[in-house]
Length: 95
Image (cartoon, rainbow, N blue to C red; front, side, top):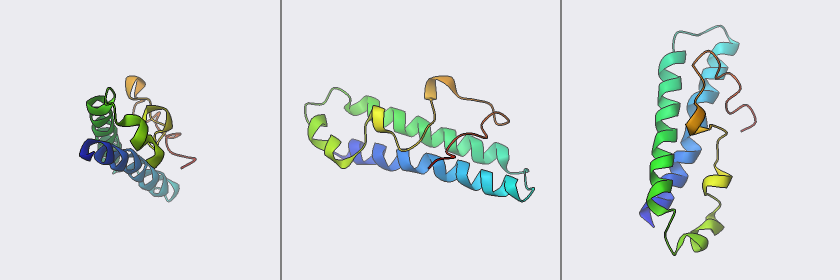
Protein backbone atom coordinates (compact mmCIF):
# COMPACT_ATOMS: atom_id res chain seq x y z
CA UNK A 1 0.00 0.00 0.00
CA UNK A 2 2.74 2.58 0.78
CA UNK A 3 4.41 1.88 -2.57
CA UNK A 4 1.15 2.48 -4.43
CA UNK A 5 0.43 5.81 -2.78
CA UNK A 6 4.06 6.95 -3.01
CA UNK A 7 4.03 6.19 -6.74
CA UNK A 8 0.72 7.99 -7.20
CA UNK A 9 2.12 11.03 -5.39
CA UNK A 10 5.31 11.00 -7.49
CA UNK A 11 3.25 10.71 -10.68
CA UNK A 12 1.50 13.96 -9.86
CA UNK A 13 4.70 15.70 -8.82
CA UNK A 14 6.37 15.27 -12.21
CA UNK A 15 4.42 18.02 -13.96
CA UNK A 16 4.89 20.52 -11.16
CA UNK A 17 8.49 21.07 -12.30
CA UNK A 18 7.66 21.25 -16.00
CA UNK A 19 4.76 23.62 -15.44
CA UNK A 20 6.90 26.05 -13.45
CA UNK A 21 9.57 25.77 -16.15
CA UNK A 22 6.92 26.74 -18.76
CA UNK A 23 5.80 29.69 -16.64
CA UNK A 24 9.37 30.90 -16.29
CA UNK A 25 9.98 30.51 -20.02
CA UNK A 26 6.84 32.49 -20.82
CA UNK A 27 8.34 35.51 -19.04
CA UNK A 28 11.80 35.03 -20.48
CA UNK A 29 13.48 33.22 -17.58
CA UNK A 30 15.45 30.22 -18.82
CA UNK A 31 18.29 29.98 -16.33
CA UNK A 32 16.44 27.37 -14.22
CA UNK A 33 15.38 25.10 -17.08
CA UNK A 34 18.06 22.47 -16.55
CA UNK A 35 17.49 22.00 -12.83
CA UNK A 36 13.68 22.01 -13.15
CA UNK A 37 13.94 19.49 -15.98
CA UNK A 38 16.23 17.26 -13.92
CA UNK A 39 13.90 17.43 -10.93
CA UNK A 40 10.87 16.55 -13.07
CA UNK A 41 12.72 13.59 -14.59
CA UNK A 42 13.81 12.47 -11.10
CA UNK A 43 10.16 12.47 -9.98
CA UNK A 44 9.33 10.33 -13.04
CA UNK A 45 12.13 7.97 -12.05
CA UNK A 46 10.54 7.66 -8.61
CA UNK A 47 7.12 6.98 -10.15
CA UNK A 48 8.55 4.21 -12.34
CA UNK A 49 10.41 2.71 -9.36
CA UNK A 50 7.26 2.49 -7.24
CA UNK A 51 5.20 1.13 -10.13
CA UNK A 52 7.78 -1.62 -10.65
CA UNK A 53 7.54 -2.49 -6.94
CA UNK A 54 3.79 -3.14 -7.13
CA UNK A 55 3.14 -4.21 -10.74
CA UNK A 56 2.82 -7.90 -9.80
CA UNK A 57 0.88 -7.36 -6.59
CA UNK A 58 -2.40 -9.24 -6.21
CA UNK A 59 -3.82 -6.12 -4.57
CA UNK A 60 -3.09 -3.82 -7.52
CA UNK A 61 -6.60 -4.16 -9.02
CA UNK A 62 -8.04 -2.87 -5.73
CA UNK A 63 -5.74 0.14 -5.63
CA UNK A 64 -6.40 1.05 -9.27
CA UNK A 65 -9.70 2.52 -8.09
CA UNK A 66 -7.60 5.40 -6.70
CA UNK A 67 -6.70 6.33 -10.27
CA UNK A 68 -3.05 5.56 -10.87
CA UNK A 69 -1.19 2.90 -12.79
CA UNK A 70 1.16 2.72 -15.74
CA UNK A 71 -1.58 3.51 -18.28
CA UNK A 72 -3.07 6.37 -16.25
CA UNK A 73 -0.05 8.29 -15.13
CA UNK A 74 -0.68 11.88 -14.07
CA UNK A 75 1.97 13.09 -16.52
CA UNK A 76 2.83 12.58 -20.17
CA UNK A 77 6.52 11.74 -19.80
CA UNK A 78 7.70 8.54 -21.50
CA UNK A 79 10.49 7.40 -19.18
CA UNK A 80 11.94 5.12 -21.85
CA UNK A 81 12.31 8.07 -24.22
CA UNK A 82 13.17 11.21 -22.24
CA UNK A 83 13.54 14.33 -24.37
CA UNK A 84 16.37 16.83 -23.84
CA UNK A 85 15.81 20.02 -21.84
CA UNK A 86 15.48 21.97 -25.07
CA UNK A 87 12.98 19.48 -26.55
CA UNK A 88 10.89 19.08 -23.40
CA UNK A 89 8.71 22.14 -24.03
CA UNK A 90 5.63 20.00 -24.75
CA UNK A 91 5.78 18.03 -21.51
CA UNK A 92 2.82 18.59 -19.20
CA UNK A 93 1.16 21.20 -21.39
CA UNK A 94 -2.28 19.63 -20.90
CA UNK A 95 -2.00 18.91 -17.19
